[in-house]
View (cartoon, rainbow, N blue to C red):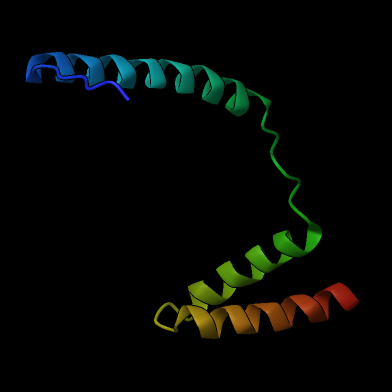
Length: 82
């Protein structure tokens, strides 16, 4: 393997060149991916749960998230069975 030596300035210039190429390649690929992404449809259960959670949070603002979400899930299941 050949022995290559370069100055610090040459090395830094080479690193800048490599990083700028990677950034420009990544930016074009990322822009294409973001443009083709599609939002998922919100299910009826998720909508109902959101309503129940907001209602409980308004009534009990100091209650923990876990307790409120547990109650909201129970209420949602009950409502969805009707």
